[in-house]
Image (cartoon, rainbow, N blue to C red; front, side):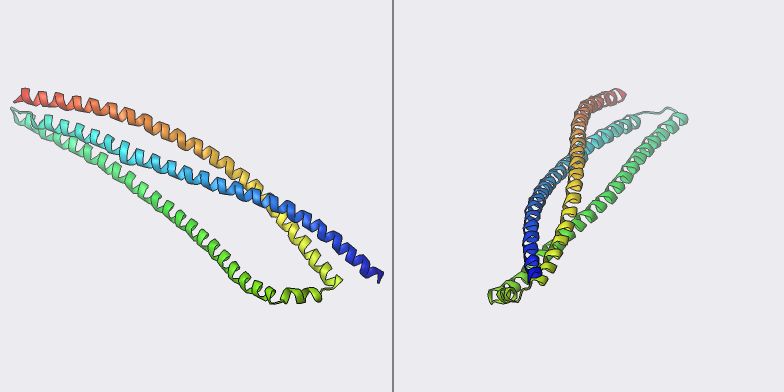
Length: 250
């Protein structure tokens, strides 16, 4: 009888210890959850910044820069076509130069196409990764939904008296085994929580560095935009000089 009393007292003490561990673990898990949610918000903000940089660099800077180069090639072709050769040698020179300019233009356009192909390939990879993220979210949601379905059925059984029946059948030995199992599970959860906290901290530092790099890239894109716009003014001046030259040649 004394052993049974001692076991009951031991169970009570261990249960209290587990309750304290649960309280500490709950605080740690909640903190990690909050950090990860803030981390995801920062990651989403970075993704928006990257999209802004992409739009600014690809749809903005690139389009203007390509227009500038195409206009300059047009000026070259116009000046060459306006030449009035007086011999076969000069005629050959004119045609040769026209071919050369057009070949250079085609080479540059081919280089741009290669870059576009690389960009498309990278974007496909990005979309595949985003798809895998969506799948992870869907699977996680399904797990929670399944858990809810199971708990609904179990709660109904508890309400019908199953948990009360389990309590009346409880024994010190059964309680001891369950307490030991809970202690073991709690220790594993505490270990997981410690690892999760370290990994979350590492991700936070990485995202901070990513944010810094993205913002610096945005500044670089904006600076390049100013240079491209300045070039545009020079292209217009080049076009005017070409027009003046065509009038003189005529």
